[in-house]
Image 1: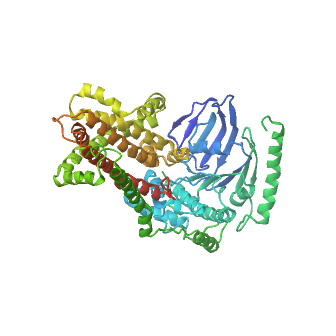
Image 2 (image 1 turned 120 degrees about the vertical axis):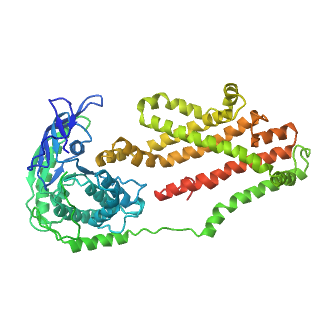
Image 3 (image 1 turned 60 degrees about the horizontal axis):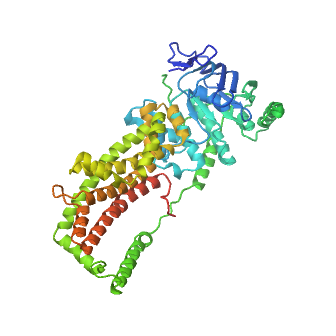
Amino acid sequence: MAIVIDTAGIATGTVEPATAPVGQEYSVVVDGVSKIYRTGAKPVQALDNVTLKVKPGEFVSLVGASGCGKSTLLNLIAGLDQPTAGTITSASRPALMFQEPALLPWLSAGKNVELALKYAGVPRGELAGRADELLATVRLAGTARRRVHELSGGQRQRVAMARALAQNSPVLLMDEPFAALDAITRDVLHDELTRIWTATGLSVVFVTHNVREAVRLGQRVVLLSSHPGRVVREWAVDIQGHRTIEHPLVGDLASDITVSLREEIARHAGDKNA
Amino acid sequence: MPETRMPSALETPRVVGGQDYEPADAAAVNAGLDALETHTEVTTPLIRKFGRSVVPPFLAIGLFVGIWQWAFSMKFKPDYVLPSPGTVFTTLGGLFASGRAFEVVWTSLSRGVLGFAMSAVIGTLLGLAIARNRWLRASVGPLITGLQSLPSVAWVPPALLVFGLSNTTYYAVVLLGAVPSMANGLISGADQVPPLFSRVGEVLGLGRWGYIRHILLPGALPGYLAGLRQGWAFAWRSLMAAELIVTTSKLGFGLGQLMDQGRSLSEMDLMLAAIILIFAIGVGIEVLLFRPLERAVLHSRGLRPPGRR
């Protein structure tokens, strides 16, 4: 199933199943997408003509200051919202991870994963087994019966990752998933995410305001401007071998990107309501 | 959908996009972090629990009976107005010995339970409709809240006129008393469901009914249970009011009728015995049914019942 949003400038936003399969070339195509919110007193332009193409198996990091429409863009790709203009094509309904684990507290860790599996079309008899496998993938083997409140923040986010993987989508969207975690746990989860990504070949769009994190994880870092969100620049991350957040090359590239990010933010110094 | 098998964590790592990783290292750190986070449940010994929650109410009841006995022996009021606790308990014992207590309690309790069940069905459907529909919420919502504060005894005369001397009159009054609480409980429970969960539902592709079944209803359960509990209290009160007013030999003889009999015979001990029975049923259902249910639900979610440390 693909989400094709056809627009002629204004929100015609029709969602229909794709007749032609999405090309092998890209798993997500965001083409000239704008988003204007008209709920407030005056319209707010969140995104302006954003184009982003993600290849199968590619890891793209999106960075930007607050108000750059990072989350808006993810919501649009996930199909939770419709663009005002432009088209979004995705290989299938993408999996989405939030900043909060957003696990259902009335279900055990395993049942949370099973719910996603069930709606991904896994037969009833295989649910428990598959959930156990996925929990093992995020190194939480044997915790299927634990309640959400019995897990630590990092463990919860790993269950959320297992749930996202359970959707069996080739596209994983992540909305600052590690922002609320302590530094050590975040570090470990960076390793986990890299491991899972290399093992599964997922396309990942990872949104963060943490430039180092973006460089640590991504093959490509895309910088978005704020008010409205536009693609300013992008960098290829060409660092071989095991990456860590302290890696000198990660630091170097992060410094470069931070300079651009600061310039972007400084442009808004004269804005009203600053 | 293309078949994309999920490889297990234990498979050999590939090097993709210039990145590799050191599984052993990450696994060890992970295991260490998890071990440090080990959750220990603190359990209170059963005897201390008993001492904390069961003994105090009985002490309070004992104290109350003591004061009553003292007031009786001081002869503040004549005996037929203020009988001794002993007289009342003897009357109560007599009701049980003759089997009349069971009959009367059964009549009222079966009315109460049936009325409660009907109210639960109607209240749940109504609450669900109002919680899901913005227009209904704006229009009917305030009326439901208003009805909740209306003493249900006010419905007895009109219900009597409409349904006459029949059990339907009782059920009508019970429904009007209990349904608003239950509907409101479900609505406020549904409002407690974090908005993030509706996005989770969309991302997982639950659809409308999947959302109601897997997210809205379980999420609303604590508020819904509180509503059911309050609904029971209102149902029981409404029923007693209706039974006190609508007394006829045509219908079964319930606790309200027993009270009324005590009133017409000026037998204070009978009235007090009936009050004790009404109180015991109301509290018994609350303590034996709703409180454990509520506690179990909250406990399973890592929450604590209100008013408890």
